[in-house]
Length: 399
Image 1 (cartoon, rainbow, N blue to C red):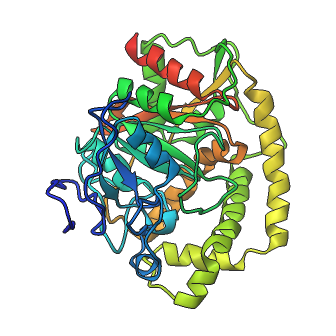
Image 2 (image 1 turned 90 degrees about the vertical axis):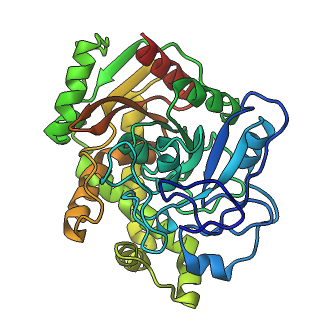
Image 3 (image 1 turned 60 degrees about the vertical axis):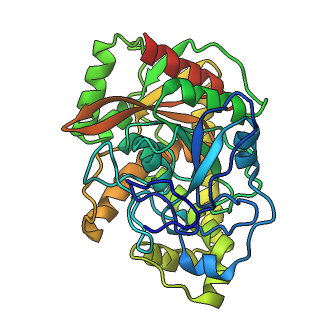
């Protein structure tokens, strides 16, 4: 990938060709001496935002202001080294972009990096920067974090400022970030999270047995072995064996899929009809489906979403955390055939959608591996319990 205006090397094919040059942060601050990259969803003043699409880049003007979350990092002293690749219109969590290529997964060479914040995760995993800004609608921080062996957080819905970020599915969109180093990850959280926390001491961590049973054995067995060997006190007497009868993983996935698709078309449909862009494989098919989703279909699924939300608010009151696999499967090889990828996406979406549907925070913690593939433990907390999840990650990994 040829990048303009920069001498920074790109060993993992992360930067977009239209990336801005290096932007230095404030002379001092809590993030001084740290470097970061930015997903090509966030505006940078005097440069264009591409959303993973050359057609979008060509038909839109330069940004007047930088995104609020970027400004926060710069004001805290961090230096931005560039913008990075994402899946086209963020509508995939595989990490492959037909126009810009696939960022390399340094943690599992030859495997997909995960998406849609693919370049964000890959740039951190490759050691190109200290942290990166991504976004998470249906797993786009949590999945790349898991596949690339990083810390990643999908915050409570609404806790990070999305001014200057392209909207995909506004009911679910959140900002998020990645880091290899736990202390750096925590520092970034101190800067980015707003003051709307719900303070409570974690008094139990409930094991989501239904999710471990659903995930592939290659994921579940190493995770459960790690939990046992590290003597994690995850309330063994009070696991969540099954979801309540009124909800299921399949139905939760379908609810998320329909609502997201309707909102994606509302975000991009007019431009797509006017421009007729050349979509990459997978994205084209999903956009074709999104166009057909009616308001009535969406409204029906919103009722189901509200039911899921109600159930999880009871399962995760302040002080309770749910432990589950972040992904249902290990990362597959780059250029896996579309049919296999579709089945693969469907399975992981069934468990990754839960926090998205409920607007709850979920952290991805790299704890173990299988045949050279990183495996991450997910923790879902209560609304506003983001800081408690960060603190728990610190306790788990430093003990």
